[in-house]
Amino acid sequence: MKKKLALIAVLSGLFINAQNSWSLTGNSGTTPGTNFIGTTDNQNLIFKTNNLNRIVIGDNGKMRFGTGSAINPNYDFSFWGNPIFSVDDMATSVFQIYNNPNDYIHFRVDGYNMIDYLQEDYGKVVIGSKTLANCSDCNNYKLFVKGGIRTEQVKVDVAVSNGWADYVFKKDYQLMPLKEVEHFITNNGHLPEVPSTEEAIKNGIELKEMNILLLKKIEELTLYTIEQQKRIEALEKKVK
Image (cartoon, rainbow, N blue to C red):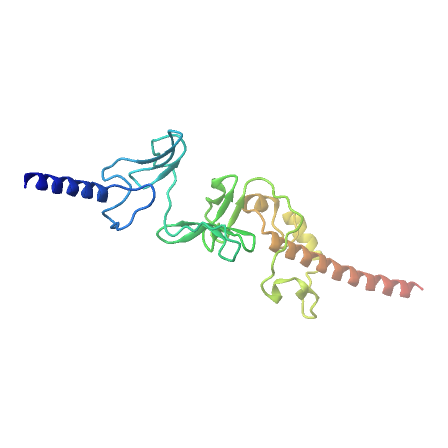
């Protein structure tokens, strides 16, 4: 009888140990929350190859890739929200970085359409110097670049039909008399409506607005020229 009880105890121990062990060929009958690979204290979980640390999951949830073991709370990696990693060739081919808890997309790669998105639908993109975006009137701007931008084409949308300068050619447009233009230039040192050098340096210039303004001045100059040509022709006719 004692031998039978001892045998039962040994078999029970083997069964319990088998239930608490993980097999390298797969496991079944596991219970989430009870059966897991990890730590139950405030220690890091380390994965190794060639006896060197390769991935460290810190007790604070951050991840470190490489041979170190210490987790830097300021510089090591964190994964939040619902990051998606896909190498599929279909429309779901994306890589996304979210900002939890608001789920703002800071970076997205659309592998299907071959488009990279930065700060999609939110925030700003700064290249070169973060201080560029620290200005009181920058809320309407999304891209800040320190230094030059070199490209082959720049296309600027004009939102409304009256946003262009062709209204200068309408019959009811009043040209400033040239005497008044001369008086303004003498007193101010720049054309009417055009920013002065000091204003341009202090506030910068809006590229679209400046191009429209320059077009307006060219159209006004054309009207002045046409008017002068008519007077010249009238005088020539008188002389003849």
